[in-house]
Length: 117
Image (cartoon, rainbow, N blue to C red; front, side, top):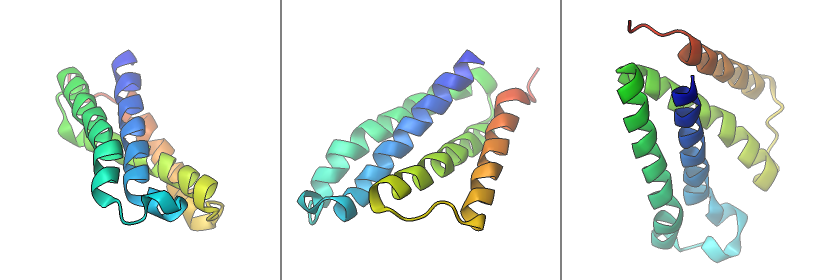
């Protein structure tokens, strides 16, 4: 369980960096037209989080699909919150809330349902 929490945290931090890599240009004028800088400042640490999350997770469960679904769920938990917070786009639509709930279910399945012995 500790390994899963570390992996989920790394994926969540990675997706947070990813959100800022792509969307900081929409939040702050400073980042407009600074794609390379944004990729270096936010993308490199985010990629490192994904790399370590994959390494640690695969060593523990030996299933890349489980890691992919965990990363997806982390992204769908972080993206609506950051988009709501910084861009004031509502995450409280029926469609978004259902997707967030499904992401929570995916996280719970990945955390507690192990297929390897």
